[in-house]
Length: 111
Image: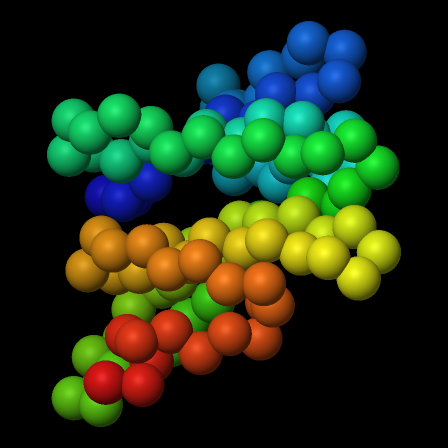
């Protein structure tokens, strides 16, 4: 079971879902994505990220282990523009951390 599904909204109004109708996982276009919505299966409102024009959108999964040796997946979404950046780290315990660098070490990874 997947914890999150997402939708990416492009400049031209195109909407891309995480999975194709055939069930294949997709990746959003980093230069065309202007809005990104992340939905969880807990019934909470989606997390929406707006991406400024001229920014490069990032979305990837980072595998990690906590101090107890439990493996988890951190979903990282964000954007960079010249020397600026904004990233959200969606942790396995359903908490979220914000950082200005993709190399941020989360509390989940430190604990």
